Amino acid sequence: MLKLPIYLDYSATTPVDPRVAEKMIPYLVEKFGNPASRSHAFGWETEAAVEEAREEVARLVNADSKEIVWTSGATESNNLALKGAAQFYAGKGKHLVTVKTEHKAVLDTCRELERLGFEVSYLDVQDNGLVDLEVFKAALRPDTILVSVMMVNNEIGVIQPIAEIGEICRARGIIFHVDAAQATGKVVIDLATLKVDLMSFSAHKTYGPKGIGALYVRRKPRIRLTAQMHGGGHERGFRSGTLATHQIVGMGEAFRLARLEMGAENERIRMLRDRLYKGLSDIEEVYVNGDMEQRVPHNLNISFAYVEGESLLMAVKDLAVSSGSACTSASLEPSYVLRALGREDELAHSSIRFTLGRFTSEEEVDYAIKLLHEKISRLRELSPLWEMVQDGVDLSTVQWAAH
Amino acid sequence: MAYSVKVLDHYENPRNVGSFGKEDEGVATGMVGAPACGDVMKLQIKVGKGGVIEDAKFKTYGCGSAIASSSLVTEWVKGKTVDQALDIKNTQIAEELALPPVKIHCSILAEDAIKAAVADYKKKHVDQAAG
Image (tube, rainbow over the protein chains, first blue to last red):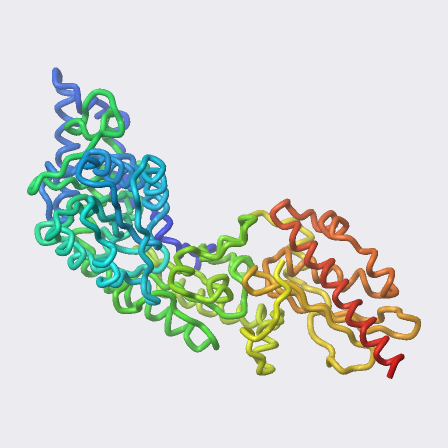
């Protein structure tokens, strides 16, 4: 029996894998020691657990465990990487480069750095959502100290050319930060070959608990950061604060499972995503947002033309999905990511992000396809735009009474 | 976003969805909003003798509150004269549907749709009288 609503929002967060939860529980009641307690067995036991987890995080991305710093999540990792590197290397230059489709945790941190006197270039993307390397190169200046580009976009799932950008940055001595919150367990990350200096991770996008993340800080060549959280000097001074052992153990186990299972899991998810796409593609006037090749198998972001996003979400309330349109805000702004792709407003307003994951079933995908067929046709019956298009009106020639 | 029971009712069971032939006797059309803003309402009224609105239909591209607001006004305008219809205010629509502050613009749009439809009726009426 199908359980409703169906969760198709794995890029917002994932459930903790039961195997992960099981591994975390002893660290709440029994093994509660402070990993920083050096004088007794309670501390030794949890310190060992923390270091084992650090190994697991490092192993998933082929890094050294000494390069992993625990944080509260990818937002904090992004803040520490960008503010920490910009402040430490401010003497070398004041210019940063990032991309318009980055997560708010990067964009808003860049805005803060602008208030502190740094200059930031926000690059446009191509209409497939990918960074154009020529545009990227042209944006670099002699005083550019830091570049931040995400690996996998949270809304459209496209995979940015991180290897190529890394080569360009390394050749010019520019520090390269990558937000990989949406990438772990979805794409292979090999930090031994990628020229990436800083990389942000989150546990809860990869079947670990919320409230824990990590920042990779390269040792060769050594990257230095100005600490943003001061205190007891934990994490070699990068990030003070008592370590949350149970969370860390959870992240380690989640990343271990991701390493072991991602190959088979991603194939299964790709099959389901393609089934969903095929099932929806016979609806008239549907458009995929973002490149379909350079994309994680978990994501399908589709615009249903002439249907408004919020009413569509209301119609498919049996599906837990998210809309690219932030219509619940008073501003009625469509997604800034879809805007950056050059999508017309009607399409940006009409998008749905489906993100599939470990526990998505074929039955759930088939239910979603059937439901969307019904609801799209009902909402189009209601849509004056659909009626006009059926009558052969070109909507771009209409004089709208904007309000 | 939590919707009121009345918004949900109009959204699930919209009243008077559809279109009249644009050239039908006594039919006037008001189209307001813009796709870029996320809502477009088309309200049509069918006006009989003595300027009484005998029937109304709508189509709306927009959120649930926009659909509910336009569905509601098709019910409210029926039986009113075109001038009485102009007395329907967005505040009444917002109150009836218990719209939250961020959705007040939906009720304003519905009021504008009535005004636009009546203006179209008056324009045609004057044209006919003149012609």
